[in-house]
Structures are given as C-alpha cells and as structure tokens.
Image 1 (cartoon, rainbow, N blue to C red):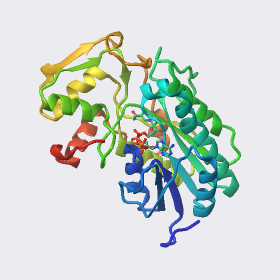
Image 2 (image 1 turned 90 degrees about the vertical axis):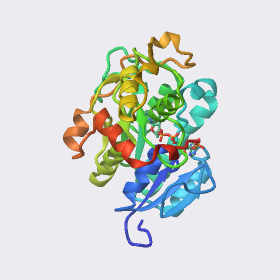
Image 3 (image 1 turned 45 degrees about the vertical axis):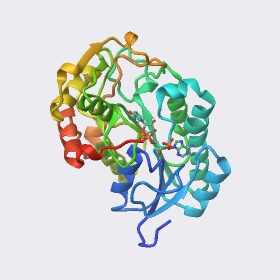
Image 4 (image 1 turned 120 degrees about the vertical axis):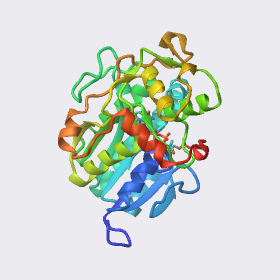
Length: 307
Ligand SMILES: NC(=O)c1ccc[n+]([C@@H]2O[C@H](COP(=O)([O-])OP(=O)(O)OC[C@H]3O[C@@H](n4cnc5c(N)ncnc54)[C@H](OP(=O)(O)O)[C@@H]3O)[C@@H](O)[C@H]2O)c1
C-alpha cells in the first residue's frame, strides 16, 4: 500500500487526460502516484505508469491487486458528448462497466474510489443544481455518468462522486476544450458561434484537482459538486476568454443552441451549486476571470498544442 518512498500509493486512471494530468501533479506531493491510461506512455509526471483499459475487467482486477493502492481516482472516460451518443456500446463499456470493474477491484483490497461525474446528469431545466437534486439526463453521455454514480452509491468500500462542468485548462497533448477552441479560433481570425442558452460554471482543471486532493486526504464520502464560482452562458464565457487573451470580441456571435449543429442535446440551465465544496473542502474556488488569468500565466500561447 506504500510506494518506494513510503508514501501511501494511489492509482489515477485517465492520467493522460486534462484532469488526470492535473490530479497527478498534485497527488505526487503526498502519494506515490501510479498513473494509468490507454497510451503507451505517460504524458505527465507520475511515479509509475501502466497502460490499462478500464473496460477490460481482468486487466483492471489484476493491475489493482498488484499495485494495491489506498485509493483510486478515476478520471478516465469517454468524454466527447456527441461520440457517446453515436457509439453507445463504447460509451457504456468505458463510462459504466469500467467504473464497475474499478469498484470491484477496490472492494477486493478495501481501497477507496473517487469517480468523476458531470452536470449532464441533470436536464438543465432549472440549474444550477445542488447535490440532492433529481437527475434526469438528456443524452447518452449524461446517462452513462449517472449510471457510473449508481455503481458507487451504497458501496461497502469508501467512495465519493465528484460532479463538475465546463472543464477547461491546458496540459501536454490534451484534447481541445472550450477555452482552447475559442482562443484558437479567434487567434486565427475566425468567427465563433456560441450558445446564449447554455449556462454553467466553468471550472479550471487545477482548481478541480485541488478539490479532489482535499477529498482524498480527508477521506470524505458522498456526492460533491466541485466547479467554478461564476455561473455564465457560453457566450459570456467566450467574451471573457477573448478579453483575457487580448483577442477580438467582435468575432463572437451569440446563437441559440438550436442553431448549433451539436449531435447530442445539451442542458440549457445546467451548472452546479458548490456550497458544500466551499464549506467542507477548504479550497478557494476560482471565478472565470481568475481561472482564465491563471491559465494565461501557465504557458505561452504558441505552445498550447492539443491532440
Ligand atoms: N471536460 C468536461 O467539460 C467535463 C465536464 C464534466 C465532467 N467531466 C468528467 O471529468 C473527467 C475528466 O475529463 P477530462 O476532460 O480530463 O477528459 P479527457 O481529457 O478526455 O481525459 C480522459 C482520459 O481517459 C482516457 N480513456 C478513455 N477511455 C479509456 C479507457 N477505456 N481506459 C482508460 N483510459 C481511458 C482518455 O484517453 P483517450 O484520449 O485516448 O481517449 C483520456 O486520456 C471525466 O470523467 C469526464 O466525464 C468532464
């Protein structure tokens, strides 16, 4: 249960993704951090790395038993909302079965599991939502995230579910996200059409990772909403991105979701109430301006390549 340095060991699945890279950067300070993802090598700085597909039961059970971590943080998922709508079998295999296998492995060695979920478990009729609000996903991605939560709730081993939304940030070779996309479009002088009727609270990936680390250290259990402090539309968010990065706001067009060619339905009034996290986790939760400023400081714009 401890690594070579006698620190307690944890496993972070999906460690090459945006959130995964931010989580391992923080957990390594306190935990011997084993990272796992689909690729041949780690993109971040983990203590140990293994290639592992969480949708393969035997591989998960074997690896977790061998590593024997005190806890697992599962950031691995099929995160593309439209791809989940189109390839439902794959979405279910990764986002639901994968979590089931991780939980089974945790139960065998009495370790804890933190699962990352989404505000897409809600229908967006009257957000932002508190932890106890009734779930009613509009699309298949949201359904898989809700089912992943149901895998954990009531488990006999320690568990926590962290719901977040509109995650943004930069790390090595990450997929694009709303901020990187808007910035790249505007920097290339292209128009950006953004929804005036999709609301949420944008979340800087580092800030979410801080919340996850706090949960891990305190061993707190249950469902937690960890997200940014400001509730804004995608259009307002895009305007703020342009301002912070010194780009042309006039290229940003406000449109209704119905006029965007998005395959899967999106919640309108989505987003999350974060009172519990603010009260219990002891982290400072950033608003949009502070989050974008922090991102701008991280890395020269020309180096913001994505995969
Ligand atoms: N992004 C958002 O706005 C948002 C909002 C709410 C909640 N979340 C949740 O937050 C978590 C982290 O999101 P993120 O934005 O950091 O995602 P991400 O950048 O797409 O990272 C996910 C990682 O998981 C890997 N992965 C995919 N399938 C896997 C499998 N079968 N086995 C092992 N690893 C696998 C991906 O590899 P490949 O890249 O090769 O597929 C990727 O490295 C996810 O649970 C997501 O649902 C995200």
